[in-house]
Image (tube, rainbow, N blue to C red):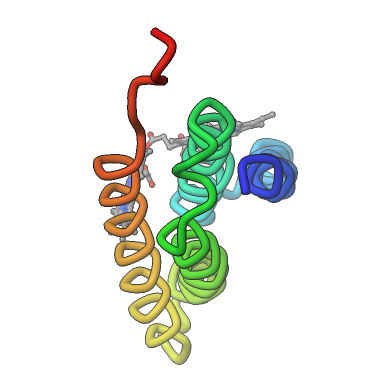
Length: 125
Ligand code: HEM
Ligand code: HEM
């Protein structure tokens, strides 16, 4: 799970930085919140989760880890696509932003529970 999270996080990194690059060159800043959350919730948060699972493999093998992975990676793209429409004044996909944000938040709650329950000091230390 750790490696999977790190690999998917760099895809968000590429998309997030791509949006940043576009905004800088086009001087069009509407997509700032999409850029910020693709980078922060996609790249940084998921890389950190991946590193945690590599440091604490027991936490990476749980059902909570699997549920976090899927809900986060379904929720975040939905939220970002919906938000991209909203920032350009089209609210027809607002529902996607709402569903996506709720799925992502739920995913993070599961991640937090997983870390609190299953990240433990290794026996040998
Ligand atoms: C080559 C890479 C990047 C470029 C060209 C870029 C470009 C930009 C631009 C043009 C803005 C809008 C600034 C404004 O509205 O005044 C912005 C905002 C932002 N960027 Fe980036 N960005 C890059 C990478 C990143 C990365 C890696 C992260 C996070 C891990 C990040 C986080 C943010 C955040 C949080 C904001 C919103 C700041 C605020 O609320 O004022 N950016 N970026
Ligand atoms: C599901 C989780 C999240 C939701 C629903 C959410 C929602 C929001 C909303 C509604 C705003 C205001 C946007 C605006 O006024 O344009 C915002 C701004 C922001 N959030 Fe989040 N957020 C989430 C997670 C995070 C996380 C984990 C981080 C940092 C690691 C973060 C960093 C930021 C930053 C830097 C801004 C200012 C961005 C800008 O200037 O456009 N958010 N967020």
